[in-house]
Amino acid sequence: MPWPQPLDPLGNPWLSTLVAAIPVVLLLGLVASGRVKVGLAAVLSLGSALGVALLAFRMPVPAALGAAAYGTAYGLFPIGWIVLNVMFLHALTVRSGRFQDLKGQLLRLAPDPRVQVILIAFCFGAFIEGAAGFGAPVAITAALLIELGFSPIHASGLSLIANTAPVAFGSIGIPITTLAQVTDLDVLKLSAMAGRQLPVFSAIIPLWIVGAMSGWRGIREVWPVALVAGGSFAGMQYLVSNHHGPWLVDSISALVSLAAVLVLLRWRRRRGSPTVPATTGTPAVAGPWWRPWVPWLLLTAAIFLWGTRPVKEAMDRVASPVFQVPGIHQQVMRTPPVVPVAKPEKVEWRGNVLSATGTGILVAAVASGFLMGFSPSRMLRIWWETLLAVRQSLVTIAAMLALGNVTKLSGADATLGVALAKTGVLYPFFGTLLGWLGVALTGSDTASNVLFGSLQRITAEQLGLSPYLMCAANSTGGVMGKMVDAQSIVVAGVSARAEGQEAGILRFVFWHSLVLAALISAWVAAQAYWPPLQATVVR
Image (cartoon, rainbow, N blue to C red; front, side):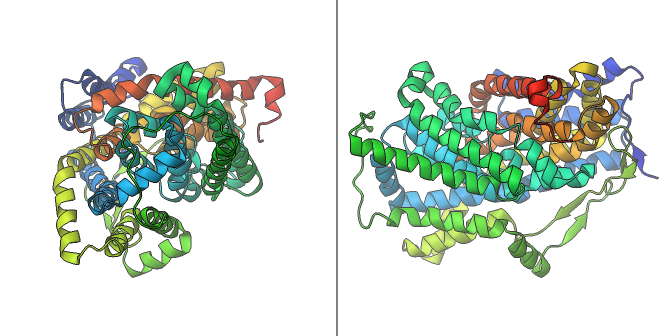
């Protein structure tokens, strides 16, 4: 008989909610303090999550251990697999000298660091998010920015803030398509609703990251570039999401945004517009102009190819074993109102080594290595050295994912969600914050939609609100939690060589995340109750 998750295990909603929040509060507190290494903080918080699950929620011991084991495995693969191979590609380009050539070209194309962060963290990062997601955009853009001279904190923090606008439509629209499956709502209508909530914020994110980097003065000096990047992305995000669907929103929007920025930069150069001078010591580019871009073009092509459904399905037919996790698979049952009908949770780990995004990155890295003149033995040696360099971070990612899955499968997250769902007329605001909380806990907009999608629909219908409004808000509110989830912070820190500085990264992004989450929550509330905006709500 599956164990039913209790929503009020202590018989007091307030006390149950406070106890359920202990692991999350402990983790954020330890990381923000800067006195405890993030790996140790993750292990301690995992211990507290297991304690809450076993003692307060009375979760069976095999189920609790199975949840932790599943999270650990998922943290290493596919998340850790992506990080490892991105860093491998980066190491190859640095050792070959191609990265210095690329750096020289970028400094000549966009000598202003504030423009560089728009091009790389926002435009290019959004394209990678559209094809892959799951940590790849932050890992790649943080590595690029650190080599352009950004500090580890700025490279990590700015990449995290930039990786908000595209998240709801990331990985070929998986968050929205998954939300449709969970809620039994029309996927095109969900896409359209999300496309009427998010573009307002997509338009301002480039301005926001420039402000986070250099304040109001920076915004005044580069606002045309930021406005063109954000405005073109937001416009295409609205059009594609409302007239095509969720699948190609990020890819098309990012390419249009990148092209618009490059056209503007070329036009300004022809007019002789003043620019901020490049940093001293700009390296000269050896050889053809296109050569430094080859590894990154191969990476982009591989990620996009691996992200397409036909390729994934073909590879999965060759090798995609599914392992039912002992002790937890179909041994835990979510209960109403979190789900319409109680049913056992499937907990399966997929060993889809061929179709994993990290494998596509590895293929691109190896192909690039051959083109750059590396021998197989030298590439293997560099890959091993990269693994040793990031091993502690991989353990930290595994611990973070274990923590998130124990919290989810014990029902602690549902207890927190149900508490927010009891806010009545304020629900459009707090329901959107529920999406933020879901991503902050799980590190994934898709996982947050699985977690709270049904709850959003049930609560919205009980309050007479559009289920499309609140289910889409779960996803669009969730994107603002992406920058503070522990998994993303660790991935950014590894890529920017900022291990040990996770507390600084969290402090850098925390208030940005909270303010943006409050703003998008207020926007959803306005859509729910303000007549001029109610017309935009999908019914």
